[in-house]
Amino acid sequence: SVLMAFILMKQFGITSNIMSLGGIAIAVGVLVDSSIVVVENAYRNLAHAQGSGEPIDYTEISIRSAQQVGRAIFFSLAIIVVSFLPVFLLEGQEGKMFHPLAWTKTFALASSAIISITLVPMLMTMLMRGRFRTEKENPVSRWLMRLYAPLLRTALRFRKTTLGVNVAALLV
Image (cartoon, rainbow, N blue to C red; front, side, top):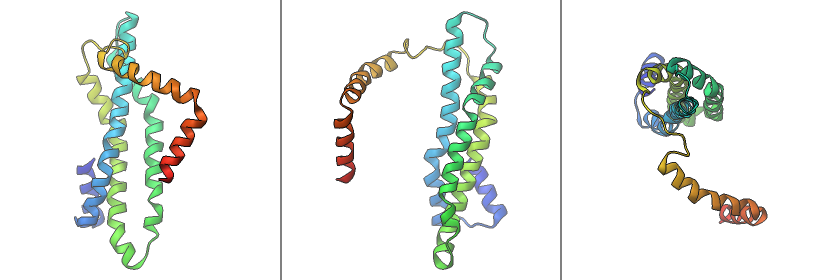
């Protein structure tokens, strides 16, 4: 995604200055999220398929997994790009300063969307093999669920208190 962003920067005549590199730095956290969602969904589907005892078609499961989350990934990245539209409307010195940041972040996010729905599923079919544990079989997941479940039950039992604590923390 970053390489594709640099290629697009070259094509659009955007220099590698502190603001354009800042756009890529800001986008890095979001870039990996979309691919992680696709891989995690495929892992979950593969673990479920292995638990059913039927023969596994890795290609079919990878494609179905990417299709399940592809639309959500695309729209989540599109919303982030749309949030930068006001930056594109800046004029004068502010526009000159922030346009490279907005463009490079947009390039990186668009590249990430393309990679997460094309390259990642293809790599999953090649690299994801072996035995996959379900969440209930995974010791780390079991430990985290035992830690999280009581907190969640308490928060749901005391909804108004939970909401009040969060609002107070936000105000502070």
